[in-house]
Length: 80
Image 1 (cartoon, rainbow, N blue to C red):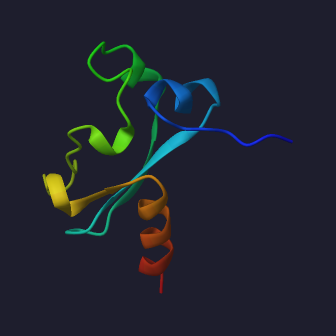
Image 2: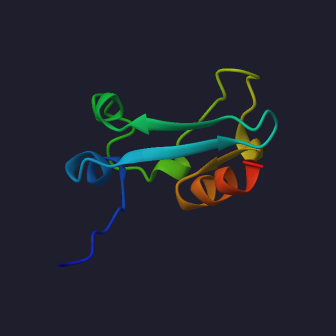
């Protein structure tokens, strides 16, 4: 079994992985499908953490949003 490299949004889609996103402000966790993101030419070759994410609940942006492994780890800490 080989390892998978996730360098950009296209890799997440190719391997069928969802992108984990966590909002530090309102503690919302979501897993986003990479499929719709590859339809936008500006996002195909970018790493998910470099995309301009915004929380749909509290509208937080930038440093208040964790993406990927950090989001998954933070979401596990958020559960009591």
